[in-house]
Image 1: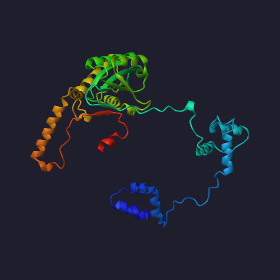
Image 2: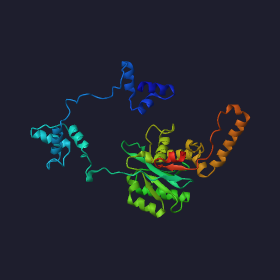
Image 3: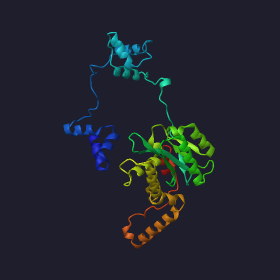
Image 4: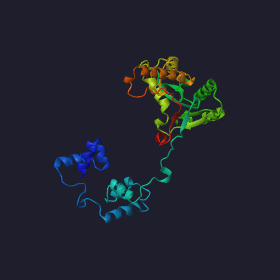
Length: 339
């Protein structure tokens, strides 16, 4: 019956592995059944208990040992060697863990419990200078083991680089100067922009956070070790370092690094047609010129379809402006919008 149901699903257009998954069956098991021509479901398991399984008395002994005053503060990895020192072997470390886990006795102790970091709050940008993202990346220097440090601030709505600099060191002072200059250049007012960043030492420094408070910039942080929480600036760094013009040798000097980054920023902001913002430049979108550009493109496509409608099986390409950019969307947000 199971084989027949799977065959019926496959004939109806389903994939065999998905049909097997719905039935709780592995696709390899189905292959073995077909090959052997079995006449019944053979997943009932062994009819006899394994000879090497623990007896109830042995399980009790493991639990009693693990809970003795001299062992209850130790892990099985310590208990088993200590028992061996006494000339005793009761069970392996993995068996100790398996029995203790079954009894609900494997938990992190309070003081050593790993920290649980909540997902960053969702940040939504509907216009420029609402949400910025910034980070620091290494640039190779002539001295092995030493680097130049690119500090860069990105507006996630327009994808425009609103601030950057290259320094010999990474520090909260350099970061503060960069954010202050970007706010001044963009005319940012208090409580206007949120700044997302990772958990590097410059980002968490007290003087840098104090400056953000003075500027009225709200700070947002990624979870430790989670690069996906800061995806926009990480993608930008990849664009930078995978450019054909990016040197395959270290930069000769700090001035050479700054000159190259200046050329890249100019190209990126004013010439790069960014795919995630309907192939307009970040500068055009930042200034609000993308609506007129996309409206002209839409009109061109509509006229082309009117001239040769037989060549258009579907509607024309979507040239509507991206009205909303979300950083770290909350779980289930896409499903809610689709509903």
